[in-house]
Image 1: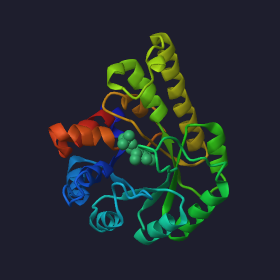
Image 2: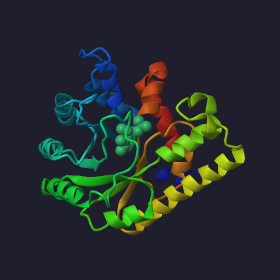
Image 3: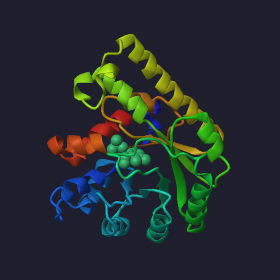
Length: 267
Ligand code: PXP
């Protein structure tokens, strides 16, 4: 109904992959800065970028230009490395999302190990908060991690939806998921359905627990035009950060249409 559509979920568009394409040639084209106005006009609510320690896509100059030119709030993802945190404090985005980082990984593979790195995370959080930057933690949808996060001065958690997205893909588009092992693909559909249900329940339970504890709740990683609907049904999730699927579609439709299509699914 109209009223049901009134409470819309915010969309953060992750534009890192525009810089990935540029770095394929190590030139200056395409420039992620050129995406900012397009994102805003197409209905995006936020720009998300990840300044990685290895600078494999977004670099310091990109981050500066994006901060200076963005008509939308910038959600800056970063590791807890002290050098990176100092840069982020100078950039002063409206929010920093702390993520785990491994140099070898293709993309962020899991949530922050909040218990394992508690003191380092606390230090990063306190430094960011001292610079009046909101802080979000990218975490697995897991009760003990949320409990551990609670004593930190954070504003938000972003729940890692990668596991859910992987299971969804194994069930619905197995031929497209070449990175799964044969044994994973040979799982009976009934088992995959159970796994999908369980992963959704984990996200839902974590979202409600975090919400109950007064935290804003976002979700992201691996979300696409097929699997995003279930996220919209979890009312306490107020924001999704989506990169790969939007930039992939934009090759064929243009960035504006890819964002319009995603916003339509979130409405
Ligand atoms: N949220 C976080 C914290 C991320 O690290 C990423 C990937 O950079 C995303 C969302 C977007 O993931 P995807 O590109 O799979 O949509």
